[in-house]
Length: 328
Figure 1 (cartoon, one colour):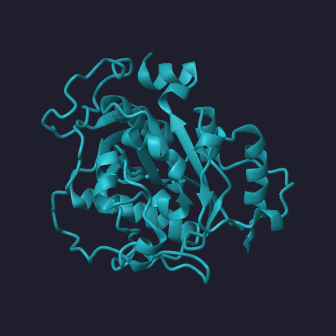
Figure 2 (cartoon, one colour):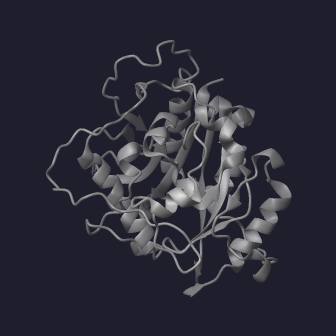
């Protein structure tokens, strides 16, 4: 969920705790909330083992059709995942060292800052880094020929969400009504694809690995913030986002027991919401997978986007996608 991040069990951080927390403050305009401090600057040649994965990762070399087979030992010793070759010269793998995470962060900076105009504070020029990165699993798609990272997601598992104390989505939305789901809920985030590879193959490779991860680790719910750019034809406007929200509110809204509320709401009632526009391709893809919108969009001024809260559940996958991703 531009799509892709979850906290488990504990109630959302109180407003007072956020106010006094140096790591959860976020620089927004007056009337808004927090700022994420970036980790210390790194050395590019440093090969530091990350404190993840928290769950055993399945071997990504499994051919399609085997992903549905049961795995009885959730906490088996972790083996380095075998990269999985996809058609079209793409290889899917999980980042195991900090230098691999840096490659994903450079791609994120290229897409979010250079292409979409995000305004990010970072101690490492050319990298999109925030406090959640060290707690997340990072999924990578590489061009097999060049070894360049051309697509990425990050996943925040329930255990790691407890460690960091929040999800990224908690900073943008009040997720109180999702409390009962957190034990088996993964947050997806920071999803992006290199401009030269937006032909569908990269995102399908990412989704296939995500589905396998969820089944392997007995998780069933994915949430995240799906972004709608505010910059259109050189003009910053929320009209497109308001119009997309109006469409999806009528067609893909989740049941009320899962509704969430933005902390900094996009003022949709003050915007033109009758434009005939399509949602971004990634959001349309999520909807085809059975995803639901959890509420009205939040405004993220740092990333220059309107963020829709979305949720996908494994049991809501349409039959043809279950067969494609899970082999069942």
